Length: 273
Image 1: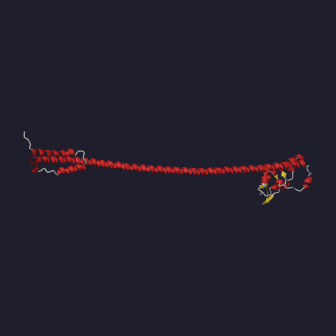
Image 2: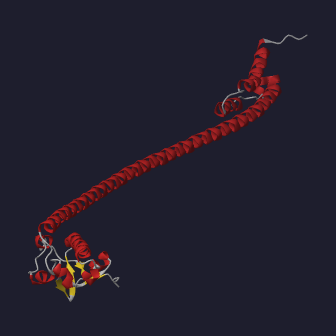
């Protein structure tokens, strides 16, 4: 067995150190492996330096460089894949952030539209409520006015009824000749409402009474006609008194003369056409 000299042991240790570069390059970055490759490439394996170990050193260097190049390529591929994955992750995060921002913007717009719709609905409700309140007040005012008009008519009717009843009781029935000679009076209701514009036509009075009367008959009752383009016009407020007078005259004729009202001058029970 040959014992190696100290220099031989040193050279063999150097060769093992070259081979150990492969193990040291495991799990390193491609940049650090490239640096190691450069260092290995710088190692001289000439015969002058290595003597009888020159061939072994050259072989160790060649195999180590080949292994380190493979490690560097693998590390570079891993790094590129990791960079791609990271870039994709960042892109995904960017897209997700944009989507979140867009969703938040849409949600904010929807909230704003909902608030605007609620405000418009409140405004419309206020307008509708105001219109309803105004209509209610107007309706109540019209109803009150109608009640007042009816109350006035009722009061006039009661006054006329009382006056006519008192006149019938107090005055004896006049003879026809005396009645014809007596000046025609103006009815109190007609005298009190002379300023009211005449809008009630004679034909309308006939329709309401259910029989035909003439302007002369109306004059006998105390109601003067207002002529408008050959039309006999009376005041609407005179209608209760007109009806009352016609009814009293009919009752009086039935009691005194015992004959229909149609025999009275200007009054006929024929239907008004």
